[in-house]
Image (cartoon, rainbow, N blue to C red):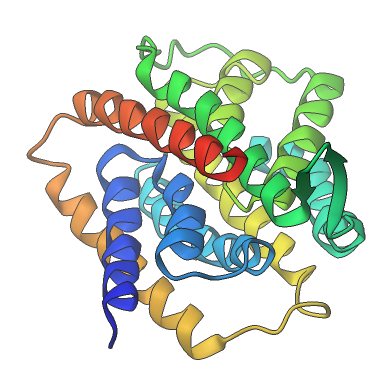
Length: 265
């Protein structure tokens, strides 16, 4: 096993650890690990990321479901437009993006570069969401209500973003569930994991016809990530998730700036 592969698998373990420790955010690491550490083409890496994120989020969703922190009805309502948009994005939009988008003088914007810069922008938004302290909202016993048009629009937007960059989009889903479905924060986190799991795996299905999947590698990478989330869930009993989330937010911010500089320099 060469050095880059070893560090790549350590990155997979870190993805799971972060997900287990703070309940989200770890998937934002998957694409950089695959592209910059394991040197996988960005388009293929986004497909792999969808599978890794989908499987690891399933573990987290199951854990929360057992605690009664998943609202299945809300997940279904939100997920339907997200399912459709993420599948269509992976099946038709991503393959249709030309290898060379445009040029500015001697500077060429390629498909791979666009995906990485777009992903870095998503990372910036995610980092601000993690750094900003969000007040936990307890269950006040009020009836859950649904703003169907806004939930549908949010689902479509999250589905397209997930389809392009291969990240879960929890930083967009959780606020939407709190504001649009009036879910308490803890239930919003658990419900978002179920939505992320399902739409990521459905998005991955859109790649099966157009992408050559290295199944031995992908299953190994995913298994290590799952091991990480199991360890992370155990360790979460002993550490402050709030402090870890803010620290990881700053790390994500630095990573996003690094990717932008690297791709545009």
